[in-house]
Image 1 (cartoon, rainbow, N blue to C red):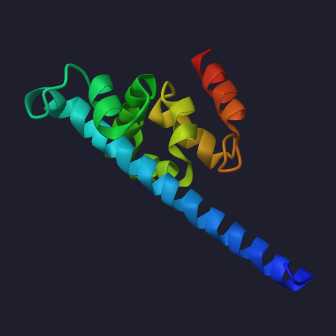
Image 2 (image 1 turned 180 degrees about the horizontal axis):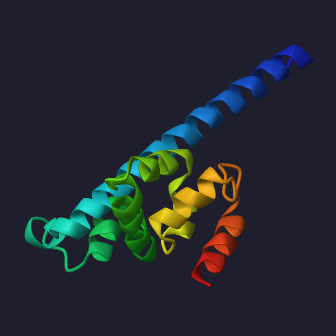
Image 3 (image 1 turned 180 degrees about the vertical axis):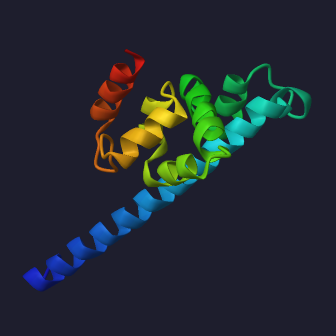
Length: 137
């Protein structure tokens, strides 16, 4: 680096690229959730692709951890394929990894908590997990 200005430009470019990469990663995982939800529902992994399970399909074909495959399929079913527009809006506000924490909570409870700011887009995975635990009680 010849100067601080060159270094500063490099840092700014890096941070911009990181934001773009994170946005692309999130879009990709949302698509993955939809693919796995569809595969789980239709069982195409057996009939067309010849895999014994969704987990094997996800691992061999898509490079996804077997356990995570089922969680992502559930996220796709519950959130992205929901007939409830409010649930879809909430799904768009949260990353798939955070939505996993809300899988065991009823749609009504999630909507109410989101409206009342009990959960927000700034909630951490731990906070969402604690919310989900308290919703069981």
